[in-house]
Every structure is written in C-alpha cells, then in structure tokens.
Length: 112
Length: 115
Image (cartoon, helix red, strand yellow):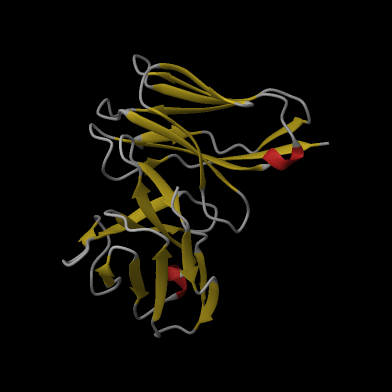
C-alpha cells in the first residue's frame, strides 16, 4: 500500500463548477500537507500549505485536512479553463523540515 | 518564495553517455533536493544535496549513477551517468524556503530523453 493515495482521474468539469480533489494517507506521522499545481511541461507550483486539521482558504481555493480520517481535500470554486492542470498532494512528517511524499496527481480539465 | 532556474531545459542524449543538470537559486537556501518524474508519474525524491558534504540518497538511487555536487548555498548539479532509455524523465530540483514554515519550491525541470 502506498503511503499517499490520490485518484489520478482524469477529471473533466465545465467552467464554473466546484472541483473536489482528494488524497488519503496511511502514515500518521504526516503533519504538514501541501497542494501543488503542475501545468504541462512545467515544474510543480505550490498552491496551499496547511498543518492543522480544518479549512484554509485562499481565493477560489480551499484546503481541508482531517487528520482523524487521514484525508485531505482541495476545493476549487468557480473553476476556470486556466485551472486545467495536474494537481498533486504532498505531505511530510513530524517537523516542517524533511522530504515530501507525493500522491500520484489528478489530471483536471476545465472546459469552457 | 525562491526563484529557481535549471539548465538545460531539455536534452536528447545517446545511450551510455552522461548529462549534468544545473540548478541555480536566487537566494541562499539550506536544503536542496533532486527529484525524478517519469512519464505520467508523480515525483520521486532522488537525493538531498548537502552543502559541503556528500548527498543523501533515497532507497533505489546510488551515487555512481546520480552523482550530485553542492558547492555553495545557491547552486547544485545532478549528473545522470551511463544513461539508458529508462532514464528518460523530467528531473527537478527543489529548495526549502521560509522561516516559520518550510515551504518547498520547484524549478522548471529538465526533460531528458535517452535514445
């Protein structure tokens, strides 16, 4: 079993839809959670960083962490064609230092 | 956030040759990492590039195949040695930045094709 599981999709939604992207993890040592966006032929771009259970909002993006269920989500409101990318969840352990463990990535397409 | 550049951005190499990839950061950083992203896959950490000492390799990666240099706090190189088609991947460097919260930022990647 992988430490981090993420549905690879692909996920296709119409413009304006609410998108929900999810990851589950098995390692209870993970304490820091990140979401990256990767456009085709580009490096990953850090979108959100959280380290406590609950919600964190930034514009159209909301990151949600449920440590009791070992489940994290990224919600995108009013999705735009420019949101079309691969979204990767990543997490790391008991200090904010140290290596990241990535999910497989979810390919998202938002069509006009 | 740190600004990271990589050279080359892409290359096509012959089997058996070696390629050195450079990573340059616009500010001094303590932690630098090298990742591999195979086609259609997620990122796998190759090693942590340590300034002034040998890199720390993850399971499945060895120094003879992926030698790494880190001469200072803004620069690192990764060499992919004796390449085979299985080495065709995107190679990414990343850095940790920030004080209270250590965020990790990635370079644009080097797309390597081995024929």
